[in-house]
Image (cartoon, rainbow, N blue to C red; front, side, top):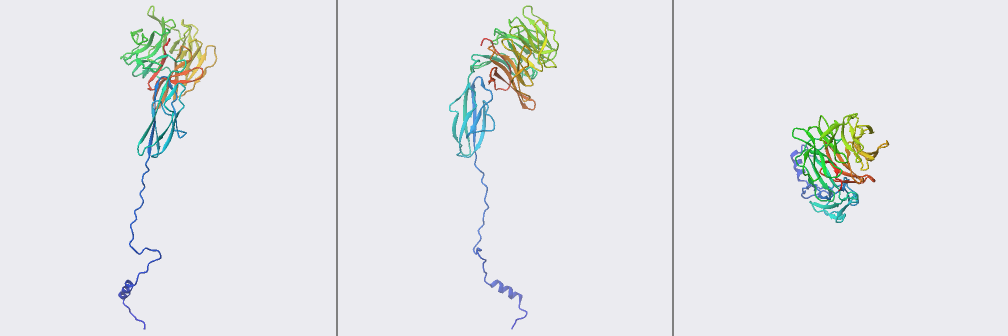
Length: 408
């Protein structure tokens, strides 16, 4: 017989008292709490590769480092370091390559290093350079600081003259007052003419012995700079201007015998004069056009030699001129042929010749490298004329206008 009106409470009680049947494979015991995995940062190690270069006539384009036979992203400087990441315990094969022929790595250029856990492993290469053929016994004089470089910048800031032998021995300052620049050395190697600026912005040509002793003024007009010697040492051609050093003006020949000057009749204002070693011509840069002119010392026969150039320097035989144009270096003869490019350059890296070695084999250069934001780095380099080999003389980024000391 069916029971009607059965109590809901009785139904709930029956449900609660019924045995619980577990689902297939479901746990019947207590459930353990599971902790999600935590990412553990990978342990890395760092290899720091460095180079130290001593001597003279350094590698011109830095070094290449190979790691396990592969070139790393950028070149290693003469005094520089590069960091490479790896794993602790990792072994790496290092090799320093592209070292100039006149430079040698002290110790093995190839070595094996093992990275240390969570630390920096150091690998250092020591390189020593000597003067290549044609530069043995040579000595340079150059300006260091913020200096005038014809065709590159006008003089400003602090600048002094420095002499450096290319045998690896120490150089030294020839001036220390902070306002000397534009060195020019007499043909006999005994005397340096240079420009010096006073605290009231007056600039005059001075002279001193090649060892820096006996400095004395040659001009006292406050408007003279850019000196260049006659071959016999009795005269100097200089710029006489109305503005600041590096700007064009008249060319005047100063005579030591009567301490007087005479102006050359020029077709254009000029700067950067250079008297030829044979004494027959004076080269200069014309203002505005930027052309290279030559003129006889008596003021006759002014003529354009190269279009668009600046900063001429004579070969020892007086048969060629090196000059800068658009950041590149060119050489031209005196018979009217077109200039030949010796060294390409541009806005970011510009080159300017500053002197030709007495043996005719090397040309001194100033390199201007852009560091961005109108900041430029200046260094002295030497270029071998016959094959384009280059060596670097300075690495302070503030040296320029190098000239060879004759007889060294």
